[in-house]
Length: 220
Ligand code: CA
Image 1 (cartoon, rainbow, N blue to C red):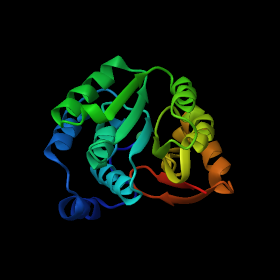
Image 2 (image 1 turned 90 degrees about the vertical axis):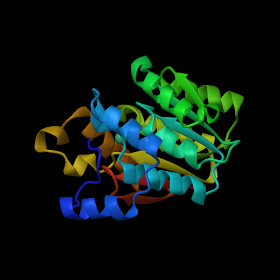
Image 3 (image 1 turned 90 degrees about the horizontal axis):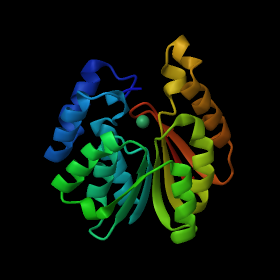
């Protein structure tokens, strides 16, 4: 896993960071703190956070779901892009990591927009279908445990409205990883996920080589 866009030379990547990234100070602080933590490779890169904020604004999203909060960089990037009455439900199972996230949502003044659910995400998605209903969400960021990607995706297809977007993270990990990693459980799961969505007629898709690969799936 990686905290920067793959396949760019260091020079090109530096240019991108210096000339096209607008990272709010609060996100920069969160990124710096997370870089010293266990699991730091799970944090999304600044250009990817900015890209997802742009997507949220592009489709006029008001309601988002995130699977895999970690220390909150991506949820904060999305929350900052939402209107004041927007909402993001974010799912994780780690008290330790999400404590950092909470601190930064508060610091950024967006805690009222963020609804953290600390339990296995499949259960939360079932709850959301009961409480919020089908098609109640505009945008979903799928970045949790890879073996459940297909199960998450199938539930998100009912929760996200037609015209809404599911963004699935790390989908190019399978191709860029070392030979050992290519046979790992996450890599095999991502390969199955990529094959699952490749010709899925329920969505339009594009795999974007940002971060470690971000597959955009627009619900038809
Ligand atoms: Ca990820």
